Image: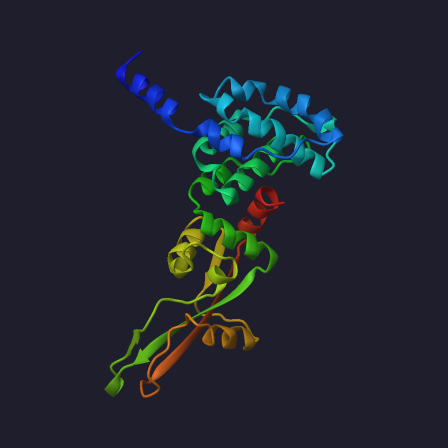
Length: 254
């Protein structure tokens, strides 16, 4: 064993991976879930042989995956071994991200979809997308899936003598406060990332017709306020789930 492998093994012993998944233990499976459990464990056997440290999360998957199929009333005959191209990176990522509920739910649903013979939507790209999300972004996506068109707004200062305009602040949206993000003030960064990943479409030159959306933003306690003497331009815009984002949500959130 080389030094790198030895270091990795020692580090793995020190990480509380097993404790994390013990903390995620589900209630006892129902009778239906117990009937599915043996089938899902068998279907995941080829994957367990490909993932180092699979035993650390097997207790969680042995319950979560049967629950996935039971909840959706998918017949046991439809359960198949997942494509390693999708399943292996999912399980590997779950070893270090699944203590975050928002990401754990997405990975679990994606793995379940990959094990459903009737599903053709478990795209390998979805794994990399989840790996690049923060828990806050997971909360935002979940909210957008229910209400996909959202307003955003920023203030611009109109300079004297026709010298142009300057942004007073980045775009503001209250979605981070609505979903109890850990860092709601980081909305501009979250929006940029979700747009980069193709989950969200941003329309800087379009806005929602209903003015009430923007009136609500302006009375929000964290909306930027300025002296009334300053000449201000209100820039209204909007963002929404993309078609790709909706497909991602159908697989990873439903």
